[in-house]
Amino acid sequence: MATNKLSPGFLSFVVLCVIFMIFVETDNPDEIKSLPGLSKQPTFKQYSGYLNATGSKRLHYWFVESQNSPKDDPLVLWLNGGPGCSSLDGFLSELGPFHVNDDGKTLYVNEYSWNKVANVIFLESPAGVGFSYSDDKNYTTSDDETSLNNYVALQSFFKKFPEFANNSFYITGESYGGIYIPTLSIRIMEGNATINFKGFAIGNGLLNYELNDNSHVYFSYYHGIFGDDLWADLNNYCCSKGVCNFHNNTDPNCRIAVSISGQINANIP
Image (tube, rainbow, N blue to C red):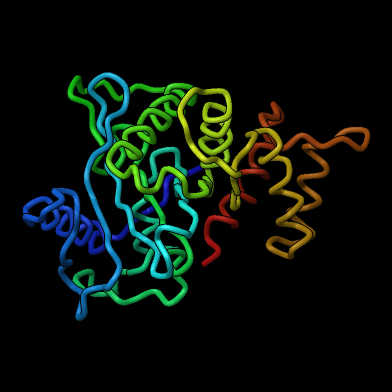
């Protein structure tokens, strides 16, 4: 699944925010006291910094406490997909408390922010994504290694914030998070770390490439995203005896038809 495309203005603002957060001195070195581009600073606490993963890997996080009752509300980990998409995309354009205006310089308050009812961790994973890094400069990874690093980083988070250890903990995300989320959940359930894990949720997730490729064609046709002519080509070239294969089909005409259906989906606003 393709990595989300971010505008230059959006990226510039993210860089500005992180630089600003690094050089603001506070009692807690990770606590953010103010952000550029906000007309009024929030009343809830927020933090940004790094969590230790395996080896020399350091994963960048941005954590916002609940606007309701931080000590009682659940703790939620958010993971964007890609693979390779920064979770700051989720923060600054989806479920975070602030979103970026079109000018790329100022922020506005998101009235539907999840941190109205939950404490939310936005983690940039794996190393090499966003501001996460590895001292050895080796960014080759796998799904299994990513889940391990996320698991170790979570333990690092609870060392920084032991006051949240008893909060109900949930994992959620989207896209390739369909891989990240269940693999991390299994590690937590089978591991020795003390985490009050309650469950996970996946939005628009990629769980299996073959099932995803085959289902998106049916979904697109039955929702009117493309018409009967392309549907006829897909059936003629990709189906045999009532069984359709839109994933890795060797028929070149099928590949062309599937590619066209994908391009139509990609161009939907």
